[in-house]
Length: 118
Image 1 (cartoon, rainbow, N blue to C red):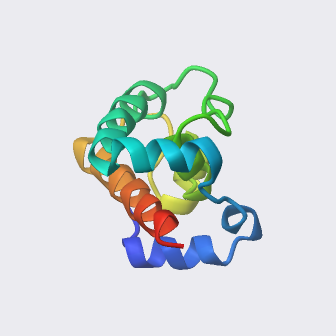
Image 2: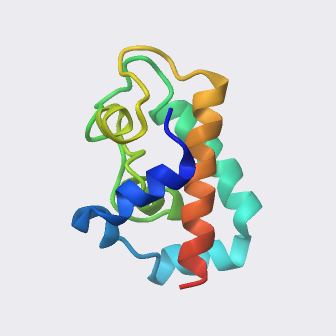
């Protein structure tokens, strides 16, 4: 796994990743329910959609909108196992370890907190 500072430096150089913003209903949802509630849901979403060794529909399993976690996943390259491997150095084909899951959730939390303060 790569250090969080280095991850965010890599993400800042990607025009694709920089275009994501938390707006509309996703921002309202985060502001209404708070970061802890959203992160609890995020942990469940990561466990179901990203953590398995062979996630169902890998590469297409993360919607683009309708939850702050989904937007954050695309912005932080934690949307599929391919992006996770390329950007975060977490290999495909094996279940995420608790440490790797913690890394993904830390990246998502950091992005969400920065997105609210933009």
